[in-house]
View (cartoon, rainbow, N blue to C red):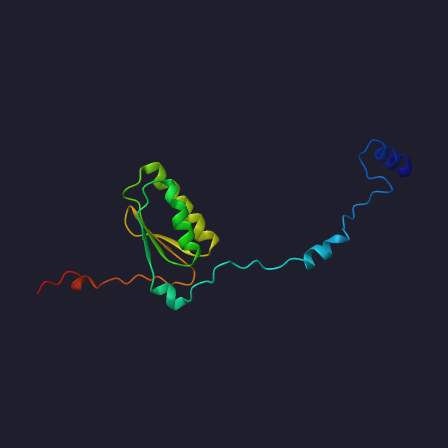
Length: 140
């Protein structure tokens, strides 16, 4: 009885025909994977020593300045982004863009002040040092 139900299901297109199987193995899959190669950046990356000696401060005026920030950051150079001259909509877009860059490059985006952000590459360790409360503004 199962035979006529399977035949009916195949004719209605509910089941695969005898020629069709659930095996979706493609003979070209192994060849395709073997042809994958690493793409290297055109410019050499800076060494850690070179990165720590160079920090770029960006004062974007609008969204069009995002390209300069992205290009600099992709070279593993830390970027301080001062958004004080940008309207609120473009500032939000730039922060979102910088957050995406940091995520893609495995870096960090940190807020320094309300309108200043630090975009640091993964190779740079940024740590906070808190002053002792009694020595913060010692005027003696």
